[in-house]
Length: 109
Length: 118
Image 1: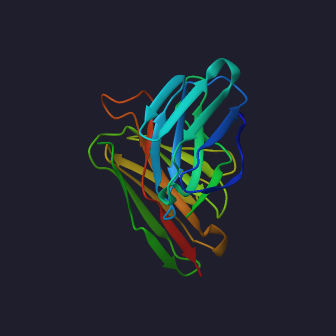
Image 2 (image 1 turned 90 degrees about the vertical axis):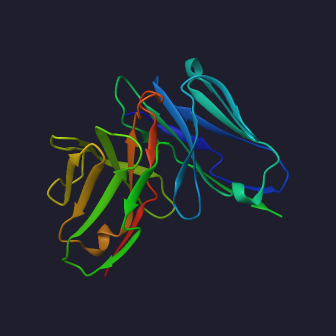
């Protein structure tokens, strides 16, 4: 099956710093989503981005499908950005998501 | 829009009992829902695909007789953990996808159910 690797696995930032999270996948995809899992376990949809670039406030994402990677940019980080960030992909014509390994982010004052 | 709820949020049960978890799409209809399992500090693993009006499709290694799935309506899927044992303790999360007018195969997740089996 498809492999989805995220880097870095852990990241500690000072409030106000910027960061880039990466998601590499081993096969072509028809869906890529980025999620933030908050400390209570809720997965929050950040982006649906099988290709191209999108921005939403301090967050933006870019997926280069031909090179099989996606990037999530967080600017001016805040303590509320802390949590785990997952990318997840669908392959072929299906709709089953395969989750990446996750990036644990901690933003400190 | 695209809100998914789960109930209960937390359950503690004795070994050998069965536990039912409900997943509802609140503002859209979902012919397909998904059930995931997440162990501490790990990623989400898909357990099964729940199809309205038909049998669920289970991922390799998931016991269908252990994890019973019923998708009786377009807004409700249930997961029953039968004869639960301590190793079944985990965080169970459901999702539903493709709300009308939304992105093809985009999924939205419930808040999860934390199961502890004593």
